[in-house]
Structures are given as C-alpha cells and as structure tokens.
Length: 168
Image (cartoon, rainbow, N blue to C red; front, side, top):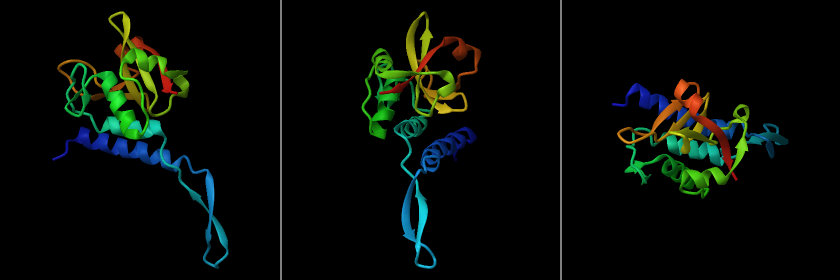
C-alpha cells in the first residue's frame, strides 16, 4: 500500500514531467482539420532536462543516504544529482564543488525545476539539492536519513542557502 507521502511525491514527479511538456507548447504542426483543410495544432516539446532530472530524483525519495553513494542502493547529495541528471540525458560532475563550478548562477526569484541549490553546512559549501518548485527541493541530507523533500523556507535551509545554479 502506498503511503500518502509517497503518493503525493509520485503525483508531484508526474506533474513536473507533464508541466515541462504542456508549458513548452510553442511550435505548430499542420494537420488535417475536419473539413480536410490544414489546421494548426500545438506540438508539445519534451520536458526540460532539469524537469526530467527532478522527476528522477523524486523517484528516489526513501532511498537511504550513503556517503559516496550514487546508485539506488544509496545516495549522497551530489550522487543523487549526478544520477538524476544522467538518467535525464545530461552528464554533470560527481562532487558538490565541481557541480558548483559547472553551473551558471541563478537568482532565487528565477529558479526553475531542476536547478541546483547549494548550502553551507558547518561553515563550508558542502551540500546540494535539486529544486522541484514551490520553494521545495529533493536531496540526500545525511547519514541515518533517506532521500527526502525539503523546503527552502525552513529556518535551517533558508539560513544555509548560498546560491542556486543551472547546469551549463
């Protein structure tokens, strides 16, 4: 039986994937209308790489934290990001520091699903999560915990937040 939280996360992952497709309708295709004349219909583009990566990351909620982990047996924060982007079709670095260098800075007000969020923990930049919308992010927090969804608005993460970045 699926718990309420797991069901909500599954619905959120599906919504993120579908939003990328629906909101990106910008091209037109000519198809036959009912009277056999050409009719323009929008063709949805695939969801963005970031949205696909976020959907993959959300599917990992509940997987245990494992230092150095980058598989469904266990993830650390940067391993989850690398795994998710890899499954979405984009190669990104493995470590938090290299991820920082491989992203373009994004203002907090311009966040998009799939953007990376960097946090200062114990005095140094050492944690990364993936933005999923509505001030929430998915991440592998620490030993003894599991991949989970956090909120940027909580006092802890709000004060630890350093910057956001979009993979180049």
